Length: 403
Image 1 (cartoon, rainbow, N blue to C red):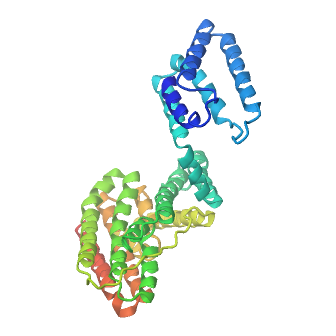
Image 2: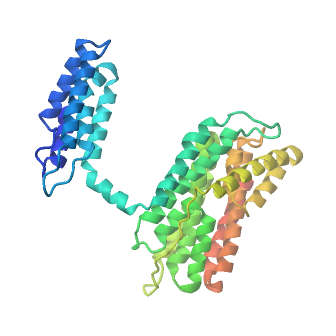
Image 3: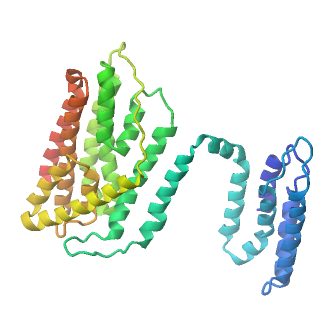
């Protein structure tokens, strides 16, 4: 492993500056030295500590030495690599084998990607670092601290499950947001933005594409994008249900898979049969940060409200009440409703009943999107995608009745 790191170090730091300490000879010797000093007295570690201090003083002298004219002052990467290799011996003797291998591989990857990482830093704005920090707060700090037990009697949903639902949606939305913002592909017209937007929010994508259709009448790819975003919605529902309820996801898979294939086939057929003289567009979807605190609070509140409403509707009116609530939720954000059902928000309801409710919500959402396409689009020219969405809604309602 020391030789492995030395090879990478030589290629990066000794190509122009031969005096940098470390390399294919130095690193194996440092690893052997650290191993020997550790074995002399593995209990008190006095010999190893003295050796480590000696190496650190040698590296400090290198860092403090004045830089030669025309060269940059040495940074901390060089001494850090040397000290890491010096620890390989004790790591290999006291830890599982994968620890020292992982340390070496990580060091090599960081050394070899120096230029690429520097270019990345220059391209990523500071607000994106803050966005990533918010995501880590949601996942790594708040989630582990929440209790995983119900705090009220009218719903089995726990604070941990509610926040886990938020994390699941935020993760999917954040990945789509990053791709929309940084993956600049224009050859696909509206298709790629529609796919990424469908993974984020098919409703918002429909509105955005319909508005562009108003100013770019006659562009078939915008119509195709509206249908394709809904096709991706079915995959998103299947994915988020599978995270929390594998049995329910399996029950839904034939229906959601069939609807996805149907919607995607219609979109591809419309794309393949477009006129050769059809105008090609470059869709522009505004990628908004999905991790704003207001967005998170709204989602959490809506999730809890729908979980409570689902539980109440199930107790008061049975499955029919849940189905009615599903139809209403389709005209809002269906993700909180779907997740509340996947996490057992309605106690005692069978898996086919839950699957039917989710299909009803998705179909009602298609009705809403067809209305949006007509309202925000170019009137008559948006009739084809609106008609397809209504057709998908009808098929979805029909499949729900079979459950």
